[in-house]
Length: 110
Image (cartoon, rainbow, N blue to C red):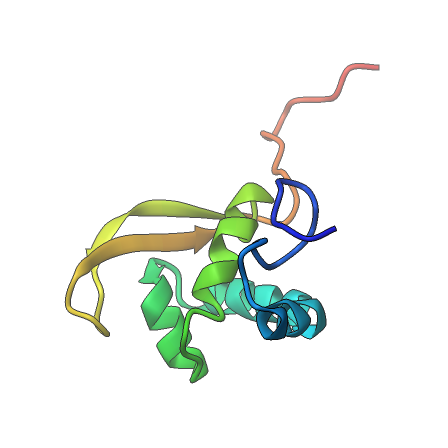
């Protein structure tokens, strides 16, 4: 199906040219998402542009993955900082723990 309807899994819009659609279908999205997540873990409270800069990427290849990581509850925005790449105010990100932490001393119901 062509389009980017929520949950469709497509990485392109219905209005995108065929070349963009083909590129989106073959792009290594998982590896870019994992790279973005790894960099946010390594450099917490960085902006999206700073993460891209540190990875040597450009054109939003990592920035575009942050929304997906937020929906998956793997990263969260933790306020605003001044981006060292652009000099502008931008959201800063932090990675969430991979497994939920339960408070000590509490047991799960049986």
